Amino acid sequence: MAVERLTSTSNIVELSKELGVHRRLLYKWAEQLAPVDDGDPERPENAKERELRLQIVQLKQLLADKTLEASFFRGALQKVEARRQKDGESGGMASTPKSGS
Picture (cartoon, one colour):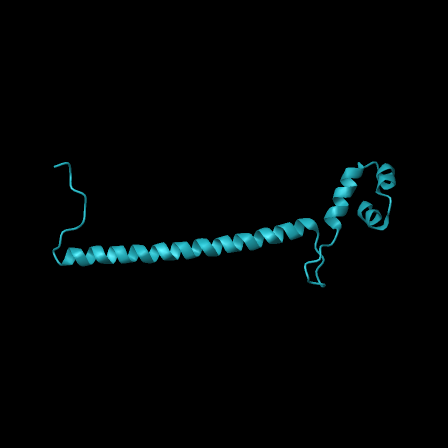
């Protein structure tokens, strides 16, 4: 009921007095209900939805970056392990630090 009245009134202060709700709360509700133009005429969004969608996009990009990093390090580790195995088979000395002598 209050939300319907909020969308149809032009005087939020008067509505806040009538409903017994602080006007700041009504302004906050009005902001959350206001559609945000994201280029898609089929889907109106409020400010909170838009913020969450932007966070989702950022998190997906971060996940893609971290996945790429993990793949790089996995490949590098495999190469290091392959070299160690190859050095071990030929009887060569492994490159380890010498103790204090």
